[in-house]
Amino acid sequence: MSGLSSINICRSPYPWKMEEHSEYQYPVMLDEESKQPASFLNIEDMLFEVFRSDDTNEIDSIALGQFVVALENTGLRRSDPRLAEMLAKVNIYAKNEGPELNGEILDQKIVDRVQFKNLIIENIVLISRALRHQLIIPDFRGFTSMLDLMFDNAKQVDEGDVANYIPQLAKQAPDQFGMSLCTVDGQRYSLGNAEEKFTLQSVCKALIYGIALNELGRDVVHKYLGMEPSGRRFNDMELDYNKQPHNPLVNAGAILTISLLQKLIKPEMSMAEKFDYILNYFTRMAGGGTIGFNNSVFLAEREHADRNFALSYQLKEHGCFPEGTSIKDCLDLWYQCCSMEVNCETVAVIAGTLAHGGVAPITGEKVLKPEAVRDVLSLLHSCGFYEYSGYFAFKVGIPGKSSVAGSMMMVLPNTMGICLWSPPLDKYGNSFRGLKFMENLIENFCFHRYEGKTMVEKINPRRVKAESRGDTIVSLLYAAAAGDLSGLKTHKFLGLDMNASDYDGRTPLHLAAAEGHKDCVTFLLFKCDVNPSPTDRWGFTPLSESERFHHADVSTILQLWTAKGGDTLTCKEGQQLLSKMTLAQE
Image 1: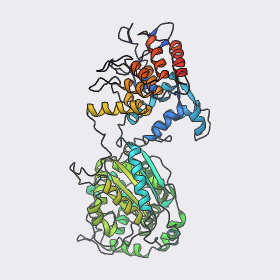
Image 2: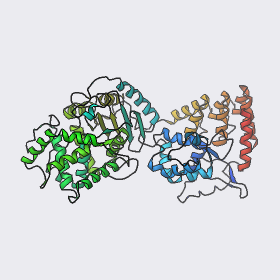
Image 3: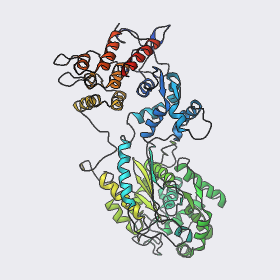
Image 4: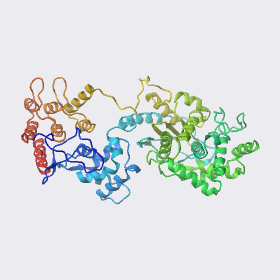
């Protein structure tokens, strides 16, 4: 009997239909009595084989820590709400009742095939996409390694002054710098002081504008305010030719937008209820992340409110407000929004929600309508950086909003959201280090909104690296020759032909045997079920290569495998063979 070709493959226990032409078939019996072979036609078995711990000497065990770390390397976090079912079971398997997993317990915990399948089955779509490099940033580790260098470079900037119009902002340490990102697929990464708290300040202008658009529509909202860059200071008294605020991102426009939320959206709500309403909206945009409130900042804003009162009475003079608007209540609600406390990680998810067309990446909740997001991003592109907006749009070309707290919320549509925070500001009120980081980012990656496919000198991290069949074979053979077991596992998981050969008929097994890489030879035989005796153009087989280069242990492994013939192994037989092959490696 040769492999699986002459036997019936059993059906998967899962309800959906599996294809019957998987390249990942592995001749091992799991049921000794019925002699029915295992079906490796589903992704769960493929994952199990890739991550099975070589240290356990068990045919049906996997090191849980290795699998979770591999997921984290794709950008997914253990705390990701979309993996809640898996993490709940991990806690059970690790016997850890606390809210956080103990890393040592997790790394040491071994689960069998049935446990592993049960662990991942409810989250299999996300897990398989991540490990097959099908998320928006396929090479996430490579991408973030470049971000590390850009962050370190921007951190060296030593210019600017911390905002001091209220004492609470003036107390911020000037050396702090944080960065966090969240892709539309929920990949997360943070650097520096990403968990340090700061208040939203002007970043909230974009969010309250988004709520107004979502609830009222653009036609209603823009009956009250314009959509043009002002070219003036954010708190300038000048209105547009219609005697309305130029846009919702200057102070006059934000105050008017807040009045729309007060009087046109659920006007029966009390002030406390309206605050909770807005906070709930922000929290949903943040994927359920914690948003606090800094009361001292709120009180300080109220104490320094003369300019905004002047702007408000000017708006009232020209009949800009909805009927019945209380200027005091309106300003209080705006200051409350500005005083909501966040960190880089929270704002990055909010930006990711805007990048994802209004759908929160880590919860999948549709928070904002796509049309509302479109209009928010349009104005962020042209008006998001005070009087520096035109230059930023020209040079960086990414929608965003800065604040005097030192934060920058950046939105790369259909890709990711980024939050940067560092208190020292330029003369316009933008973070010096944040600007430097974004300039570095756009110099290296083709993220500018108007860069086409011809920008070949820049990297597109959203693109899966395309390889021809020849490139793939070279990569596979190189991994075998170099003893790169991880590389071989990746090739196998991606569904590549592990029997592939070059023009001389040299296979990965030939090269691994010739170089004496025992673990690679065992992997290719035991997990990939490659042909153990292929012949190259000179008539050499892997066994003859191992003998020719005096790798006796590799020769023993090949002889043990070849001696089994084409028989399908039971679980017990497979474990015995694996034990013998492992002993040969020692």
